[in-house]
Image (tube, rainbow, N blue to C red; front, top):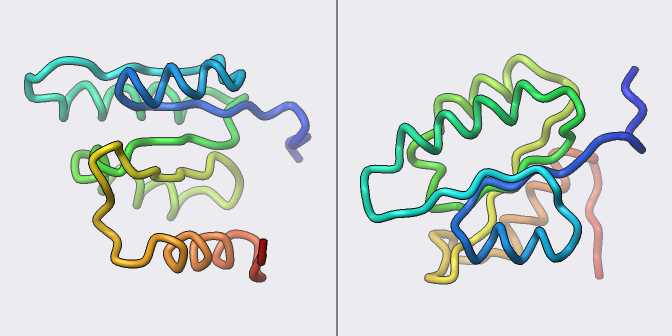
Length: 117
């Protein structure tokens, strides 16, 4: 059994997301930059981070999910333990109509009950 106290957070995102989470103390990150086709870069970053045994949560930009949906599905199928992949909206918005409902359902799925704040 993995001791949860020793698991880290990783982030895969653009410069704004990565720098913001680095200021919050995240040490494992992959910054995706440029206006080129980034699909290969995003896939490689996720593959590298998934293979790190000390990573419990992977925060990734929602915009990148279209490049890695198959990898995320494989992770969800194969693993009953970390890492958990959490998509966060970009500064340009989100694709979900009701973001709060989306995250409530996501939390309910992983921990089995609702959290109200």
